Every structure is written in C-alpha cells, then in structure tokens.
Image (cartoon, rainbow, N blue to C red; front, top):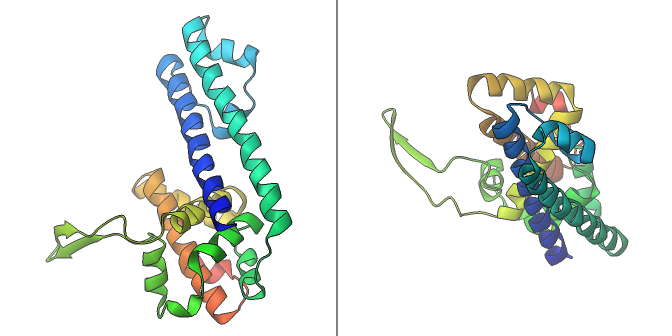
Length: 218
C-alpha cells in the first residue's frame, strides 16, 4: 500500500506539471491567467478563445489536457484500491481532523511517518517532512545549506497537498497564506502553511488531540 500511495503521489506530481504547462501557455500567448479549476473546465470552445485561432497552440494545450485527464483516471483507480484494501490505524485517525488531510493523505502520512514515538521533538518531525529550511546562518549572513534531500519526499508532498486543500477551504488558513504571499511569494507561503500543518500533525498524533486551527494559525 505504501508503494501504491507513492505511485499516486508520482502521478499527482505529473498531473500538476500538465496543469502548470497549460497555465504557462495561456499566459504567454494571451496575457490572461487561468486557475486550476479553469484548466479542468477547458473545452474546444474555451481553448479556441484563449488561443485566438492559433492551431499550433491549441494542439499543445489539448495534448496537455489529454495527459492530465489520463493521469486523473489512474489516480482515481489507485485511490479506489487503497481505500478498499488499507485502513488508517486508530492512532492516526486524529490526523483527519486537520484541515486539508483526508483519508488518502492520512494514509500517506501513516505509512511514511511510521511510529510517531521515534520523533522526540516536533522539530525532528518537521525536518523529516522537509518542512524546514536547510540554510545555515551566522551573524545575519548565510553560511551554507544542508542536504535538501534529507527527510522523506513523500511526506513533504503530502503536507504540501494538504496545504493547498486547507488554503482553498479554510478561511483562517487562507488569510495566513495571503499575508505570507504579500511578503514573499506563493511557493514560500504554501510551504509555510505546510510547515504549520506538519507541526500540528505531530502534536495531534503524539497527544491524540483534535486539531485546533486557532492554535496552529493564531
């Protein structure tokens, strides 16, 4: 099941690549922006409107769409098998109280994190989930970076996915994200949300308590 969930994560990453490619094509050639929901709702008529009669551009977008929809089907197929054959352990069910984490992401966290007792402190878990910076600073100057590949990339992906869902559906978390975006950029802001969720997940699972967004995103 862990390998199947890892395959789902890989396909999900490929699917995101297709969406970003379409957004880039539309932006560069029409000057317009299109969000993820807009990409998913594209049909021949809407593609034609964005492309302005450019048949080559239309073909490029349709190619991305075909791959994206194929990946959608495969992701759904994998999810059905995982949900049918795997179950969250009782001690991991509290993770479902965290905004952005559903059954599939909960199982991904369960299989990738393992026994939470092996993480002595919350910082250890956040580091393992690649949710902390690897930069080393001294006297306000950057002295280098650690190995960015340390930790678990699938756990990191799970919290980034959870962050995107939480931003979309939770107003408090969305406001936190928007404040961060105003100071940095969307990628850094999303990682900041993922870091908060990873820390919250540690406490929720370690202490077996229900997630409180007011504490995590004060």
